[in-house]
Image (cartoon, rainbow, N blue to C red):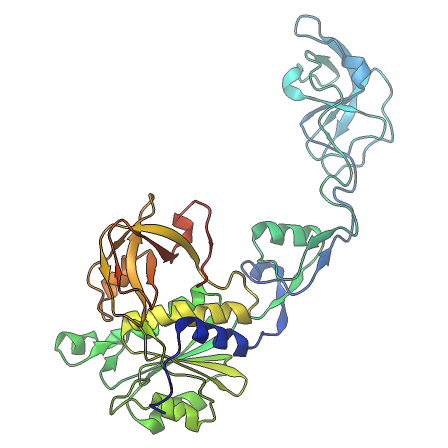
Length: 419
């Protein structure tokens, strides 16, 4: 297996996307669908609004009755009644008569104007209209929002609060959406402990299982449901037992045990459990010892044990795959052109993903030393600076590509990252 060639990053990405399956849809209560991907088309079940209604609190009148009204020469009209939202409207209102009306209340068919209350004396039995600026205005027509049969939402729509409101307006208590991927996460290593054993870390005996927490958070951010399998010791039987006894999952992520060390068992264990091994080394830094295969119809991602390597390989390979499985576009983070604030030297032959901070002027500065165990370098980064495999030096002031880890902080035109 050691002679399996290292894949270029782009080839590895393409192989993964070609192999992972789409997930099946499920019906979800409307209150829980925000952020999910719609797996149906929704057409309007009725016309909305179903009737003409008032856009203002005021008085329903005939425009001809109020034309020319001013503050100094108001028009006086008899008030025939009140129409509140939810009330039935009179079929018609005679000329010379006004009805008090509330926002959203139905407007009689023969009325063409609603005078806002601010332009009147707010009278109850009689009203003085002191401005005619609202003549022929302030009435929402039936069907202004949508008409029966109109296409409201299409397959693949990422549901936002406005979509939820529109579905509710169409009487939909549930929607059919793509199921969230259930992602089992297993970390391995005799040296690892959870945060409740922090005393062992202070005594210099153990290392906190940061990958378990980071990958669980990354899965949630990518739209998946993390299933923590805990920490397995460096023992093939223990690793196999954790995987085979795991709750039902769609994706398996392992961290550690993927390289060529004497205690790196994970790759072999997963294969003995029936997984194919598509590849296990990539021409990149950090994250070169990264593996991918299929455990039946479930993708397996073998991530390195170093924390930054695990997080970077998740960003480059796992996150796009999870989004593909849940039909969540775009697959990749947004990338922009940036100007380097400092020169960058890399190892030729490898694509480098360097932790960087990109400012509002699109100037990129490295977060500091780029060691694969430096958590602060990843925490401070808002981008990964991409240095292609055939580039070993980039001068200060030169242009490079950066993949934004937090695109909401960059309010400017950008395009999805591609090689």
